[in-house]
Image 1 (cartoon, rainbow, N blue to C red):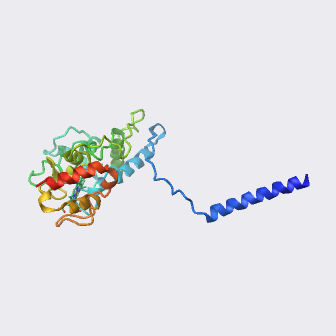
Image 2 (image 1 turned 45 degrees about the vertical axis):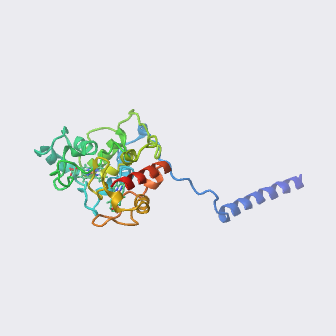
Image 3 (image 1 turned 180 degrees about the vertical axis):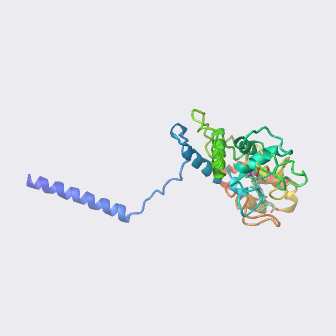
Length: 269
Ligand code: HEC
Ligand code: HEC
Protein backbone atom coordinates (compact mmCIF):
# COMPACT_ATOMS: atom_id res chain seq x y z
CA UNK A 1 0.00 0.00 0.00
CA UNK A 2 2.84 2.30 0.96
CA UNK A 3 4.61 1.62 -2.32
CA UNK A 4 1.42 2.17 -4.25
CA UNK A 5 1.00 5.52 -2.48
CA UNK A 6 4.58 6.52 -3.29
CA UNK A 7 4.11 5.66 -6.94
CA UNK A 8 1.02 7.86 -7.09
CA UNK A 9 2.78 10.81 -5.41
CA UNK A 10 5.78 10.38 -7.70
CA UNK A 11 3.57 10.29 -10.82
CA UNK A 12 1.59 13.36 -9.78
CA UNK A 13 4.79 15.28 -9.03
CA UNK A 14 6.27 14.32 -12.38
CA UNK A 15 3.16 15.46 -14.20
CA UNK A 16 3.03 18.76 -12.32
CA UNK A 17 6.71 19.43 -12.96
CA UNK A 18 6.32 18.57 -16.62
CA UNK A 19 3.35 20.90 -16.93
CA UNK A 20 5.26 23.72 -15.25
CA UNK A 21 8.19 23.14 -17.57
CA UNK A 22 5.94 22.97 -20.61
CA UNK A 23 4.09 26.21 -19.88
CA UNK A 24 7.26 28.03 -18.83
CA UNK A 25 9.83 26.97 -21.37
CA UNK A 26 8.28 25.47 -24.47
CA UNK A 27 7.02 28.15 -26.84
CA UNK A 28 3.56 27.49 -28.25
CA UNK A 29 3.85 25.72 -31.58
CA UNK A 30 0.64 27.06 -33.09
CA UNK A 31 0.36 30.83 -33.08
CA UNK A 32 -3.10 32.01 -32.17
CA UNK A 33 -5.38 31.95 -35.21
CA UNK A 34 -6.29 35.39 -36.58
CA UNK A 35 -9.35 36.71 -34.79
CA UNK A 36 -12.53 35.70 -36.57
CA UNK A 37 -15.15 38.34 -37.05
CA UNK A 38 -17.42 37.67 -34.12
CA UNK A 39 -20.96 36.73 -34.99
CA UNK A 40 -23.36 39.53 -34.21
CA UNK A 41 -25.52 38.57 -31.29
CA UNK A 42 -28.07 41.36 -31.46
CA UNK A 43 -30.52 39.63 -29.15
CA UNK A 44 -28.43 40.41 -26.08
CA UNK A 45 -26.91 43.66 -27.25
CA UNK A 46 -27.42 46.91 -25.35
CA UNK A 47 -27.36 50.30 -27.10
CA UNK A 48 -23.86 51.14 -25.77
CA UNK A 49 -22.61 47.85 -27.20
CA UNK A 50 -24.34 48.58 -30.51
CA UNK A 51 -22.63 51.99 -30.59
CA UNK A 52 -19.27 50.33 -29.86
CA UNK A 53 -19.92 47.98 -32.77
CA UNK A 54 -20.58 51.01 -34.98
CA UNK A 55 -17.30 52.58 -33.88
CA UNK A 56 -15.44 49.40 -34.76
CA UNK A 57 -17.02 49.26 -38.21
CA UNK A 58 -16.33 52.98 -38.75
CA UNK A 59 -12.62 52.51 -38.01
CA UNK A 60 -12.28 49.12 -39.67
CA UNK A 61 -14.42 47.28 -42.17
CA UNK A 62 -16.36 50.41 -43.18
CA UNK A 63 -13.10 52.08 -44.31
CA UNK A 64 -14.62 55.47 -43.31
CA UNK A 65 -11.39 56.74 -41.74
CA UNK A 66 -9.52 56.30 -45.03
CA UNK A 67 -11.15 59.55 -46.09
CA UNK A 68 -12.77 60.98 -42.97
CA UNK A 69 -9.66 61.73 -40.97
CA UNK A 70 -7.93 64.94 -39.91
CA UNK A 71 -4.74 64.23 -41.88
CA UNK A 72 -5.76 63.78 -45.50
CA UNK A 73 -8.64 66.31 -45.42
CA UNK A 74 -10.30 64.62 -48.38
CA UNK A 75 -13.65 64.48 -46.63
CA UNK A 76 -15.40 66.46 -43.88
CA UNK A 77 -14.77 65.33 -40.31
CA UNK A 78 -17.78 63.60 -38.81
CA UNK A 79 -17.55 64.43 -35.08
CA UNK A 80 -20.45 66.86 -35.31
CA UNK A 81 -22.25 65.65 -38.43
CA UNK A 82 -25.25 64.78 -36.27
CA UNK A 83 -25.59 68.48 -35.39
CA UNK A 84 -24.82 69.81 -38.90
CA UNK A 85 -27.37 67.45 -40.40
CA UNK A 86 -30.26 69.79 -39.52
CA UNK A 87 -28.67 72.58 -41.58
CA UNK A 88 -27.96 70.19 -44.47
CA UNK A 89 -31.64 69.24 -44.60
CA UNK A 90 -32.67 72.89 -44.91
CA UNK A 91 -30.12 73.63 -47.66
CA UNK A 92 -31.82 74.19 -51.07
CA UNK A 93 -29.11 71.96 -52.59
CA UNK A 94 -30.34 69.00 -50.54
CA UNK A 95 -31.96 66.43 -52.87
CA UNK A 96 -32.65 63.53 -50.52
CA UNK A 97 -35.62 62.28 -48.50
CA UNK A 98 -34.30 62.39 -44.94
CA UNK A 99 -36.29 64.18 -42.22
CA UNK A 100 -33.88 63.90 -39.28
CA UNK A 101 -30.15 63.56 -38.56
CA UNK A 102 -30.30 59.75 -38.26
CA UNK A 103 -31.85 59.42 -41.71
CA UNK A 104 -29.46 62.01 -43.14
CA UNK A 105 -26.41 60.06 -41.98
CA UNK A 106 -27.82 56.79 -43.27
CA UNK A 107 -28.68 58.40 -46.61
CA UNK A 108 -25.12 59.82 -46.84
CA UNK A 109 -23.85 56.25 -46.73
CA UNK A 110 -26.36 54.74 -49.14
CA UNK A 111 -26.67 57.63 -51.62
CA UNK A 112 -23.65 59.89 -51.18
CA UNK A 113 -24.74 62.26 -53.95
CA UNK A 114 -28.09 63.12 -52.32
CA UNK A 115 -26.16 65.98 -50.73
CA UNK A 116 -22.59 66.88 -51.60
CA UNK A 117 -20.75 69.00 -49.05
CA UNK A 118 -19.54 72.17 -50.80
CA UNK A 119 -15.96 71.87 -51.98
CA UNK A 120 -15.86 68.09 -51.70
CA UNK A 121 -17.62 67.06 -54.93
CA UNK A 122 -15.90 65.35 -57.85
CA UNK A 123 -13.90 67.98 -59.76
CA UNK A 124 -15.89 69.47 -62.63
CA UNK A 125 -19.32 68.45 -61.32
CA UNK A 126 -19.91 71.64 -59.34
CA UNK A 127 -20.49 69.63 -56.16
CA UNK A 128 -23.30 67.54 -57.60
CA UNK A 129 -21.45 64.20 -57.58
CA UNK A 130 -19.89 62.82 -54.41
CA UNK A 131 -16.58 60.95 -54.56
CA UNK A 132 -17.69 58.84 -51.60
CA UNK A 133 -18.40 55.21 -52.51
CA UNK A 134 -21.83 53.68 -51.81
CA UNK A 135 -21.08 51.97 -48.52
CA UNK A 136 -23.59 49.15 -48.96
CA UNK A 137 -22.13 48.02 -52.29
CA UNK A 138 -18.81 46.88 -53.70
CA UNK A 139 -15.93 45.77 -51.55
CA UNK A 140 -17.17 47.54 -48.39
CA UNK A 141 -20.69 46.13 -48.64
CA UNK A 142 -22.02 46.88 -45.15
CA UNK A 143 -25.34 45.20 -44.37
CA UNK A 144 -28.39 47.00 -42.92
CA UNK A 145 -27.48 46.26 -39.30
CA UNK A 146 -23.91 47.45 -39.78
CA UNK A 147 -25.13 50.69 -41.39
CA UNK A 148 -27.46 51.30 -38.41
CA UNK A 149 -24.62 50.65 -35.96
CA UNK A 150 -22.45 53.28 -37.68
CA UNK A 151 -25.38 55.74 -37.65
CA UNK A 152 -25.83 55.14 -33.90
CA UNK A 153 -22.10 55.75 -33.36
CA UNK A 154 -22.09 59.03 -35.31
CA UNK A 155 -25.24 60.27 -33.56
CA UNK A 156 -23.77 59.64 -30.15
CA UNK A 157 -20.45 61.20 -31.22
CA UNK A 158 -22.32 64.40 -32.01
CA UNK A 159 -24.34 64.21 -28.81
CA UNK A 160 -27.61 63.68 -30.68
CA UNK A 161 -30.52 61.49 -29.68
CA UNK A 162 -30.68 58.00 -31.17
CA UNK A 163 -34.27 57.63 -32.40
CA UNK A 164 -34.20 53.86 -32.86
CA UNK A 165 -33.64 50.68 -30.85
CA UNK A 166 -31.00 48.02 -31.45
CA UNK A 167 -32.51 46.33 -34.54
CA UNK A 168 -33.19 42.98 -32.91
CA UNK A 169 -34.78 40.19 -34.88
CA UNK A 170 -33.43 41.57 -38.13
CA UNK A 171 -31.64 38.97 -40.22
CA UNK A 172 -27.90 39.51 -40.09
CA UNK A 173 -26.74 38.02 -43.35
CA UNK A 174 -23.11 37.89 -42.25
CA UNK A 175 -20.83 38.21 -45.20
CA UNK A 176 -17.62 36.39 -44.45
CA UNK A 177 -14.56 38.39 -45.38
CA UNK A 178 -13.01 37.26 -48.63
CA UNK A 179 -15.92 35.13 -49.73
CA UNK A 180 -18.18 38.11 -50.23
CA UNK A 181 -19.05 37.12 -53.77
CA UNK A 182 -18.00 34.70 -56.46
CA UNK A 183 -14.65 35.57 -58.05
CA UNK A 184 -14.93 38.31 -60.65
CA UNK A 185 -14.58 37.15 -64.24
CA UNK A 186 -13.27 40.27 -65.99
CA UNK A 187 -10.91 43.06 -65.05
CA UNK A 188 -13.78 45.55 -64.99
CA UNK A 189 -15.68 43.27 -62.60
CA UNK A 190 -12.66 43.17 -60.29
CA UNK A 191 -12.60 46.98 -60.29
CA UNK A 192 -16.32 47.04 -59.34
CA UNK A 193 -16.06 44.32 -56.74
CA UNK A 194 -13.21 45.99 -54.85
CA UNK A 195 -14.54 49.53 -55.10
CA UNK A 196 -11.57 51.07 -56.98
CA UNK A 197 -14.05 53.46 -58.62
CA UNK A 198 -14.72 55.06 -55.23
CA UNK A 199 -11.34 56.72 -55.53
CA UNK A 200 -10.28 56.38 -59.17
CA UNK A 201 -11.68 57.28 -62.56
CA UNK A 202 -11.77 53.81 -64.09
CA UNK A 203 -14.14 51.40 -65.88
CA UNK A 204 -16.91 53.96 -66.21
CA UNK A 205 -16.67 55.12 -62.60
CA UNK A 206 -15.61 58.59 -61.63
CA UNK A 207 -13.77 58.49 -58.31
CA UNK A 208 -11.59 61.55 -57.84
CA UNK A 209 -9.51 60.84 -54.76
CA UNK A 210 -6.70 58.95 -56.49
CA UNK A 211 -5.18 59.36 -59.98
CA UNK A 212 -7.24 58.90 -63.16
CA UNK A 213 -6.55 55.31 -64.28
CA UNK A 214 -8.26 55.37 -67.68
CA UNK A 215 -4.90 55.59 -69.48
CA UNK A 216 -2.65 54.14 -66.78
CA UNK A 217 -1.34 51.38 -69.07
CA UNK A 218 0.30 53.98 -71.30
CA UNK A 219 2.12 55.47 -68.33
CA UNK A 220 3.14 52.55 -66.11
CA UNK A 221 4.52 49.08 -66.82
CA UNK A 222 3.08 45.82 -65.53
CA UNK A 223 5.64 45.49 -62.73
CA UNK A 224 4.70 48.96 -61.44
CA UNK A 225 0.98 48.21 -61.65
CA UNK A 226 1.32 44.96 -59.70
CA UNK A 227 3.22 46.80 -56.98
CA UNK A 228 0.78 49.73 -56.99
CA UNK A 229 -2.09 47.37 -56.07
CA UNK A 230 -0.23 45.10 -53.62
CA UNK A 231 1.89 47.71 -51.88
CA UNK A 232 0.37 51.14 -52.59
CA UNK A 233 2.89 53.04 -50.49
CA UNK A 234 5.89 51.68 -52.42
CA UNK A 235 5.46 54.52 -54.93
CA UNK A 236 3.25 57.50 -54.24
CA UNK A 237 1.76 59.04 -57.38
CA UNK A 238 2.80 62.67 -57.57
CA UNK A 239 0.28 65.17 -56.25
CA UNK A 240 -1.72 62.52 -54.35
CA UNK A 241 -1.77 61.58 -50.66
CA UNK A 242 0.10 58.47 -49.64
CA UNK A 243 -1.31 56.06 -47.09
CA UNK A 244 -4.83 56.35 -48.40
CA UNK A 245 -5.26 53.49 -50.81
CA UNK A 246 -6.13 50.28 -48.90
CA UNK A 247 -3.16 47.96 -48.46
CA UNK A 248 -5.05 44.70 -48.18
CA UNK A 249 -6.21 44.09 -51.75
CA UNK A 250 -3.50 41.42 -52.02
CA UNK A 251 -5.10 39.49 -49.16
CA UNK A 252 -8.65 39.92 -50.38
CA UNK A 253 -8.33 39.18 -54.10
CA UNK A 254 -7.96 35.73 -55.56
CA UNK A 255 -4.84 35.19 -57.66
CA UNK A 256 -7.06 35.02 -60.75
CA UNK A 257 -8.71 38.33 -59.94
CA UNK A 258 -5.36 40.00 -59.39
CA UNK A 259 -4.11 38.78 -62.78
CA UNK A 260 -7.27 40.01 -64.54
CA UNK A 261 -6.98 43.37 -62.81
CA UNK A 262 -3.34 43.95 -63.77
CA UNK A 263 -4.07 42.94 -67.39
CA UNK A 264 -7.02 45.34 -67.41
CA UNK A 265 -4.91 48.22 -66.07
CA UNK A 266 -2.06 47.47 -68.50
CA UNK A 267 -4.53 47.50 -71.43
CA UNK A 268 -6.10 50.83 -70.37
CA UNK A 269 -4.33 53.11 -72.85
C1 HEC B 1 -13.32 57.37 -50.51
C2 HEC B 1 -13.51 58.36 -49.50
C3 HEC B 1 -14.67 58.19 -48.51
C4 HEC B 1 -14.97 57.08 -47.76
C5 HEC B 1 -14.29 55.72 -47.75
C6 HEC B 1 -16.11 57.45 -46.94
N1 HEC B 1 -16.47 58.73 -47.20
FE1 HEC B 1 -18.01 59.76 -46.34
N2 HEC B 1 -17.64 61.34 -47.54
C7 HEC B 1 -16.56 61.46 -48.40
C8 HEC B 1 -16.58 62.78 -49.02
C9 HEC B 1 -15.57 63.30 -50.04
C10 HEC B 1 -17.70 63.45 -48.49
C11 HEC B 1 -18.16 64.89 -48.84
C12 HEC B 1 -18.98 64.88 -50.08
C13 HEC B 1 -20.40 64.45 -49.82
O1 HEC B 1 -21.09 65.19 -49.11
O2 HEC B 1 -20.81 63.40 -50.28
C14 HEC B 1 -18.36 62.53 -47.57
C15 HEC B 1 -19.51 62.81 -46.83
C16 HEC B 1 -20.01 62.04 -45.80
C17 HEC B 1 -21.10 62.41 -44.93
C18 HEC B 1 -21.86 63.71 -44.95
C19 HEC B 1 -21.05 64.74 -44.20
C20 HEC B 1 -21.70 66.08 -44.01
O3 HEC B 1 -21.02 66.95 -43.44
O4 HEC B 1 -22.85 66.28 -44.41
C21 HEC B 1 -21.28 61.37 -44.05
C22 HEC B 1 -22.29 61.28 -42.93
C23 HEC B 1 -20.31 60.35 -44.39
N3 HEC B 1 -19.55 60.79 -45.45
C24 HEC B 1 -20.18 59.14 -43.72
C25 HEC B 1 -19.28 58.16 -44.08
C26 HEC B 1 -19.20 56.89 -43.41
C27 HEC B 1 -20.03 56.48 -42.21
C28 HEC B 1 -18.25 56.15 -44.06
C29 HEC B 1 -17.83 54.71 -43.78
C30 HEC B 1 -18.88 53.74 -43.64
C31 HEC B 1 -17.72 56.99 -45.14
N4 HEC B 1 -18.36 58.19 -45.10
C32 HEC B 1 -16.72 56.60 -46.02
C33 HEC B 1 -15.62 60.51 -48.67
C34 HEC B 1 -15.62 59.22 -48.15
C1 HEC C 1 -9.61 54.98 -50.68
C2 HEC C 1 -9.18 55.39 -51.97
C3 HEC C 1 -8.57 54.37 -52.93
C4 HEC C 1 -9.07 53.14 -53.32
C5 HEC C 1 -10.32 52.45 -52.83
C6 HEC C 1 -8.17 52.65 -54.34
N1 HEC C 1 -7.15 53.52 -54.55
FE1 HEC C 1 -5.64 53.35 -55.89
N2 HEC C 1 -4.82 55.07 -55.21
C7 HEC C 1 -5.39 55.94 -54.29
C8 HEC C 1 -4.52 57.09 -54.09
C9 HEC C 1 -4.79 58.27 -53.16
C10 HEC C 1 -3.41 56.91 -54.95
C11 HEC C 1 -2.22 57.85 -55.13
C12 HEC C 1 -1.20 57.69 -54.03
C13 HEC C 1 -0.40 56.43 -54.21
O1 HEC C 1 0.22 56.28 -55.26
O2 HEC C 1 -0.42 55.61 -53.30
C14 HEC C 1 -3.62 55.62 -55.64
C15 HEC C 1 -2.75 55.08 -56.59
C16 HEC C 1 -3.06 54.00 -57.41
C17 HEC C 1 -2.24 53.55 -58.52
C18 HEC C 1 -0.91 54.16 -58.98
C19 HEC C 1 -1.21 55.26 -59.98
C20 HEC C 1 0.04 55.94 -60.46
O3 HEC C 1 -0.05 56.68 -61.46
O4 HEC C 1 1.11 55.75 -59.85
C21 HEC C 1 -2.88 52.47 -59.07
C22 HEC C 1 -2.44 51.65 -60.29
C23 HEC C 1 -4.08 52.24 -58.29
N3 HEC C 1 -4.16 53.20 -57.28
C24 HEC C 1 -4.99 51.23 -58.54
C25 HEC C 1 -6.08 50.96 -57.73
C26 HEC C 1 -6.95 49.81 -57.91
C27 HEC C 1 -6.80 48.80 -59.03
C28 HEC C 1 -7.87 49.85 -56.91
C29 HEC C 1 -8.96 48.85 -56.60
C30 HEC C 1 -8.52 47.46 -56.47
C31 HEC C 1 -7.60 51.03 -56.10
N4 HEC C 1 -6.51 51.67 -56.63
C32 HEC C 1 -8.35 51.43 -55.00
C33 HEC C 1 -6.58 55.73 -53.63
C34 HEC C 1 -7.37 54.60 -53.71
